[in-house]
Length: 355
Image 1 (cartoon, rainbow, N blue to C red):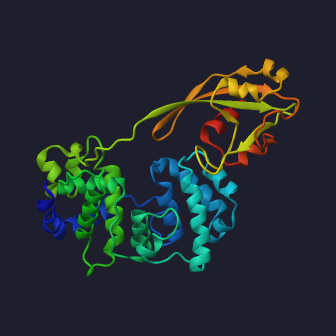
Image 2: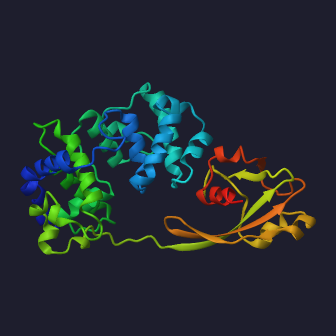
């Protein structure tokens, strides 16, 4: 649909669209998740951050463990980064955890321990983008503001027949404008929470990326993509991440007491700030860090692949028992009671757990 025609699409369907989404959410939407049915911005924020690029089923356990250790934003701000990483370990995208910790500290230092009440102010905090800010503001403070996460982009682009390339910032801004046009009217302030949750639920349970369930969709009668018979062609996003591969060798060094040698990764780069087995670009580079006697006893373990967002890591563990510390990296020895409490990459935790 050309941009000049698209400008009239949202106002045309707005009178019924929001009402249908709200009614559907109240009767068929999700309501049992632990971060729903609350106006606590801390819980909503925590769930929104965890749910970025992560399935609900995965987040449930992490959410409960985080609340158990850090029940309030004040508690999270007072925790250490290592504690946060340890609880986050396995969720991936560790910059989310780092920003979350910084955000909690800024909520205390800048806002007296209370989350700001508007999306505009929320966006000034670390790690809170426009859609996350809008979700918090809508759910907790009733602000009439649009969200546009991945699921909602799919729902709205299909309903509107929006074929603008969302790899373009200008086209994404255009869809934001359309999303704002579709909001429930200001005369129905209590509807915004149901509406926002309803769009999320539609994207998660009905308007799926493949084989959407159009027959049970509450907005099917106004959906341009359904009329075209081609919902799966939306949303349009042409720019794709180029997938690459990298091989890394990991030193699994143990001392005579069975303790493992771990280093803390640099603040930038892969697995930034996490505890990790020493990593090398080649097998030769790894062996060069060992004493001659240890080099002879080093043993190659079965390699495996760990998939990141746009890169496959081919990991090659090499085990060795060292009588003393010979590796050149800054780190320390940790026994089997200590290392599980550290923040570390999922593949390293898995590797240590099976040893």
